[in-house]
Image (cartoon, rainbow over all chains, first blue to last red; front, side):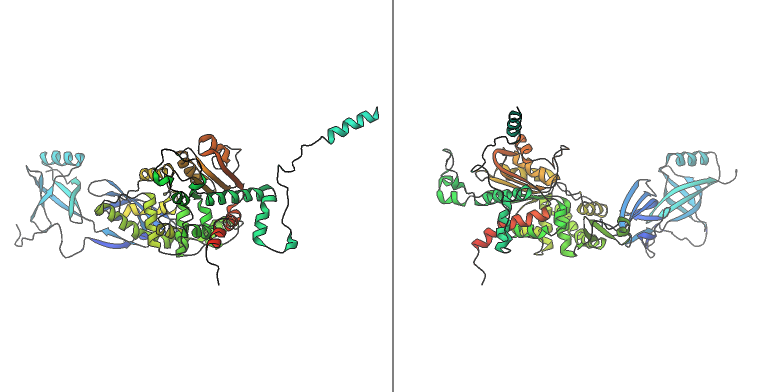
Length: 158
Length: 367
C-alpha cells in the first residue's frame, strides 16, 4: 500500500541478538540464554564461595517459545548471554489455509511469515475471534531469530 | 576357730595363680637411661601394654606381610604350573597389599607418609574416599594450614576458612581446584565422545594423577607406578561438586562404577598364589570396600586396622577383625590386629618400623 516496500526480515544481520551480562546481575523476571534458547528467569539462587569453588548462580528459567523448563549453574562473576526480546503489535488481516497469518505492519505493508500459535487456548481465541469478524491485534514476541504470537486482544466491534 | 577363718580368707584373697612365666611376654617399658634411641623406643612398645602393644603387634604383622614369599609355603599344589614350582619364581612372589584410608588423613601430614609408600611401589591397591583424592591434588595447588579444634564456626565462615579438625583449608584452595579441574573434565568428555573412552573412577583418578604432575602428590606416583586407586564414592566431595557443575555447561560425562568393582574384586580374586594383606586407616567406605573385595578370595591373610571406632554400635567402622572373620573377609588362619589409635600418631611410627626401615636396609648407606 505504501510507496516503500520494506522487507523486515526476522533475523537482523547487523545488530546482535544477545548482549553479555554478569551472571550475578541477572534477576528473577529477566532473560537469559540457556543452551542456545532464550528464556525468562523464574528462580535465581546463589551459593557463596565455599568447598564447591567460586560463588555460583543457579538459574531456573522457562524457554519463552517452547515453555520448557531449563536450568543452568554459572559462576557469578562470569558473563551470560541475555537475549534481546521484542514485543510488537500487529493488526490481524487474515488466517491462511497453510497455517500462517497475515498481519498489517506499522507502515502499512503486510507480514505473512508468522505461523499460527501452538498454544491451544490462544489458537482457539484467534480463530473464533477472526471468524466472528472481530478486529484483532496480535502481540508477537521475537528473540534470537525466532518469533511467536504470545497474546491477542480484540479492539472494538466491527 | 579364728585360724580356720583366717586361712580360708587367706586362700580366697591369695588364690593360687597359674604361672605365666614362659607363656606370656613380660611388661617392660623403654629405659631412657640408655639415651634417646628411637628405633629401640619403638620396639619397646610391644611390651609396654595397651595400644602400644597393639601397635607393636601391627608392626610385626606388617613385617610378616613384607617378608612373606611363596617359597615359604612348603606344600606345593600338585596341579600348579611348572613356573609356580620353580624356586626362583617362588622367591619372587610377594604378598599383595591393599591400603585404605579416609580423607582426613590426606588433609593431615599422613599424606606424605602415604606418598612415600606409593612412590616406592610398596603397596599394590589403594582405596579411599573423594576427599582422600581431592585433598592430595589441592595441596599441590595451595597449602592446608594448622588451626585449632576450638575455632568458632561462624567466624571461620566469615573469613572463608573451612575447618577439618584442627586444620584449616581456605575456600580459595577449592576455587583453584575448580579452575584446574574443569578443563580436564572437558578433555575427558571430548575423549569419551570422540575416542569412545568409558571412564571409571580409577581411570579418572589415573588421569588426574597424570595431570597434576607433582612429586608431592600420591596420586601422581600412583599413576607413574600403575597402582590403581579405587574410589566408588567419587561424587561425595569437592570432586562431586565439580562433576555437578561441569554437567551444566557440558553434559554427558559418564563415570562407570561397574567396571571398577570388576577391577578391584579381580585384584583380590586373581591375587593367588600371592597372599593378600590389608592395611586400613580409619573406617567407613575404604575399610569395608577392601574387606569386601578380599571376601571374594575367601579372606585376606593379614589385616591391620588403625582406627578409633568402637564396636558397641554395631557399625562396620568400629568392628574388630574378628567380626570380619565371621564374614569370610579375613581368613580364620590370618594374622590380624586392630590398633585403637589416631592414625596420625600410629601410622608414621608403623611405617618407620616396617616399610621405611626395610628400604633403608636394602638401599646403599648414604655417604
